[in-house]
Length: 177
Picture 1 (cartoon, helix red, strand yellow):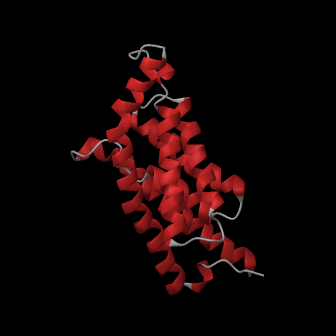
Picture 2 (picture 1 turned 45 degrees about the vertical axis):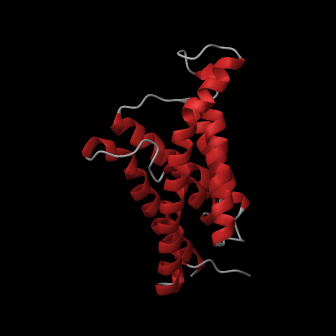
């Protein structure tokens, strides 16, 4: 019986993460705001909801990798490291998910992602000195703002939607001993 509960939960969580990952393709079809996707929210959500830590990291990373293939994005190690840190922020709130913990985890995750991916030495167009680092962070601030706003909206949809699914389908809820 427990295996069936976990299997249903796994399938629903994975499906939600895959749907959220599809928001990365929005620029191909409709104009959108840069960094306004569900990527950060899905990382926090996966970390908080998958009980198996390996799956918490693996499922969203695979969703990112598959979407990168379809979008023709090259592999950027900094983006994946930032994404891994965001999953870890979700793991940090596992078992104590609340609107406040989700918000704090999302903001912390977005800031870590910003700091990692905007480090000037990663990009050849910024000078590789302290001025270049500062310039990179200043130029990245609008992207950070967009990511925080998107994480708030998509996080509400993911966490709120899954909460409602758990209420409507109790088999999806975790069995706590």
